[in-house]
Image 1 (cartoon, helix red, strand yellow):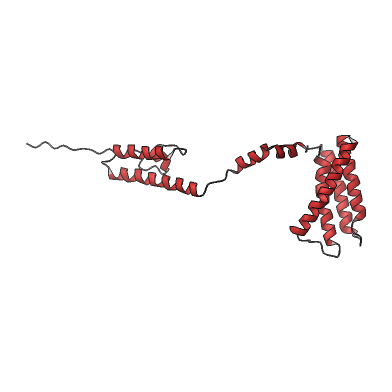
Image 2 (tube, rainbow, N blue to C red; image 1 turned 90 degrees about the horizontal axis):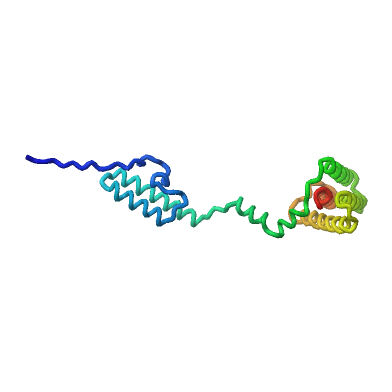
Length: 207
């Protein structure tokens, strides 16, 4: 009389799980040692069932290849980089120099510089928009003083903003933005418009 001994091989319960991390039962932050340990443990448990072993090996290989790809092409955490930049002393200092004013004040400054821009485009002169530029400087002093109520700081901020705006406006026209306003004074007009935008920001938000 023969006694038949049948060994029923266990089947890996997560054999059809698509996510390789879930299939091995590990987190996405698992180290390579943890990945290898999970693979070896499961292989020992389900060694008698070839489809289970294949599923475990496949998940292991996918994770290892993904880790290799991540090391070779590391992702840049944009949010982390932005937080680091925002938290730097220099950027914090710059942001602290700006404050959002009431809407009525914003409208007033926007209308003023929009009118100056329109006058510059409609009435360009051979000497350039000299009058409009002078008016933009006066407007900058006026609006900054309205908010700060300090003559010295208004003068310093106004002068600095005026020089900075014209330097940046001229630089952008020379190096970045092609003049889309045609004519003999197109360059001066475009530089003026860009400077008015920067002067509006300084007049409205600087504190």
